[in-house]
Image (tube, rainbow, N blue to C red):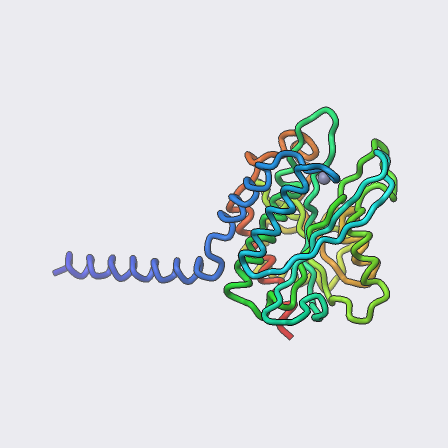
Length: 304
Ligand SMILES: [Zn+2]
């Protein structure tokens, strides 16, 4: 009798565990694993500095992945003189039309963005797996998920894959780097219908995930990110950097779109801007955490 009760108890527990597992994972099913695979698909095209065949191929790949999920895309190209000569850059924008006749005329409330280019090195095969293929991969998987499960949120988003985030010359100057985001932010600067918030993802898939928000993060967004991390039981992976970080959120903030840079700690263990930034340092689990926090942040921003 006791044995039977025990067995019944065990099977009830197992069933409850299964339901709990389904409930937990059912919310964002396998997005970390999918983004891990998507990172590998991006890296398969090789290095992707501005103006390269690799970048053109990756842009086409992202476009077709988004199109399959119902998103429409638009290239935004422009020319700039750079320390390595004149270059044509192209940002990729995407919107979820959900029946709108002109998706580019709709008002969107949030921008979700990352940089698609990888840093150009003459002397090394640099792939930029976490800088920032993993962030672009995460956005592609978030886009697929929202299109299917939360179309009302998707409709309020613009996705942007920036070109030319990385500097091209040997010296650090204010005019070298952030080419795509500076061009993109300028289009919104004087417009009354600009989006209310921006979320920038960068280096969010490292196996030792340690997100450090830039010290210039708008206070409201900083609190929202920390609250989302806490709600996802991921607060140990989130903190504040000691100072400001130069990244694509800077032009957006200066154009009047409060933007948070959810960026991994690139100062540790010497992988950053080296060939060690490859698929081996990427973790599906880290991607899953970053994606869950981003989805929760997004849902909160779009709540009202
Ligand atoms: Zn970089």
